Length: 237
Image (cartoon, rainbow, N blue to C red; front, top):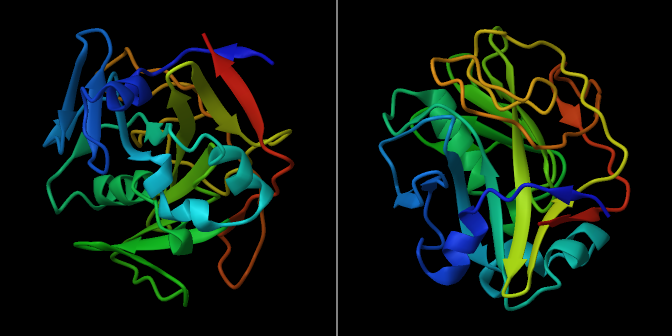
């Protein structure tokens, strides 16, 4: 198996240096991790971590859940890079917060759609209004990509699923997948598995996520449906 660079966020949570069940902004360069940040730059890692024994999505019985949830004493994290603000008027940041905070069984499946206005809710009836931001995502128990935004300003946000314990650090990723977005705004701040960078004033961000799937029309031309193979482990050195 190939190696990958660790973000550090999982190890922070494992050691107790950062809390679980809270949005984290961690900067490995400065060895700092802030819970519930008001802002987070793309040079830092934004994410949530949970004890695997407390992760509700691990109640699933499929092969992806079996892969991600097998280390019962470990930590599971969803993470990415984004120019984040806690301002409630920043609906895209609200959507990214929702994407990384998906820990319940109902919002963990592929595909999953969240609708964000001043809060985010699971959209099961394709009723997200035109002034809201929609987040259309793949499985939360493996690395993937969400399409985020109103229909005229969609960007791709790639997230990484990481598992760590005392003697291991793993990236969970689906096999043999590529992303073909319906549309991308090149001026949107994003963490893209294709470009590996954010288009903003911070030039230190980099992308390591692997992303998903084919775009199909299920009464919504922007719905991404991800066709996963068996999930694989990438060992972090």
